[in-house]
Image (cartoon, rainbow, N blue to C red):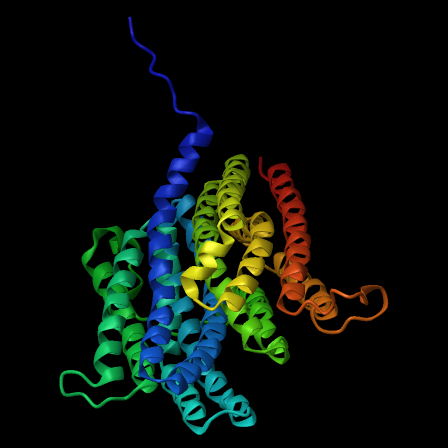
Length: 463
């Protein structure tokens, strides 16, 4: 007589598989964010001018690399589909062409970054601050090709379920960044004291080291042998590059829309003084850290959905997509409750200024309200990209950020008139953050409806 062992619940099994993919990506993402934190922290101990210059430079850096990261994501669903279909022989070609795209767009990004220095020339800045900001942007611009190639290899590795290398290499790059900042910013070990520009050189070196470390790991690991993209040389293929760009460009535009929407708030509320700006930066910094969880979960969901579709199982793809969305909402409920209850305590971890802490706590409470919609929109859009669909989620998210959030934020935060004219307006930074609640809710609702429609259509076509 045989014993029938209880089978694990399918939702529990999928959550376990998602977590195994997600947690190394999350640690790696936090390490990457930590590089910018290290730059700002080290520059702050050099001088106030260095801190201001690096902060301005990092704002440009973040906007460009996040956009480039989005464009490079086109390799992820393609590789995931091939892996699911067990067509591993097709993977090297996809990756080689994506690497050519990364090199070309990396060179373009150098020019884009260096062209932004005119913004600092037009701003009323102290000479030292302007010099550091311009120097940071120019020096770090030469990291763009390496960053583009790294993100292609990142997507390739994640789609093969190999996420541990991404975590280990990112942690190593963070440790190197902290060490190089200490040496170059303050002039230890016989090196000249470069101040804020030391952060720029450290960032440049660490991005190239990050790429070198990942290549070294991949070359030594057997997990990549059957799909190794460097087994032979291949020239760029125009039609393939165009298809990769058509798939990746909407993602890059989406990432730019979200990043710029948050970034523009700091410029728009500058008229309200340093307290509002500082409070906005505190709330933005903390919510950005929290955002790494659904963002990392989204990468895992994209991979799982892509594997199912590659295997021709549309039902499994829908199941995995909705389990991922549910997991994102579960985390968001916890983060929302934490931020709402401990908003003041979180704010005081950043500053001892009572006025700044009070405003920041209010913004964090508002951020708690949009945690559910923010998590839903990032995980859902990633699931849709697993279907190799990127244009429609781009349109939804552009509408949410640029058609709803920013105009509404301007009305509530800066320019009260008509039905908005009342004693509590303008609300400054709070007006923009309340507008984000509305915009993110619109985006999340639109993407959830879109995912439902796409999943149902794919099941009808390929049951």
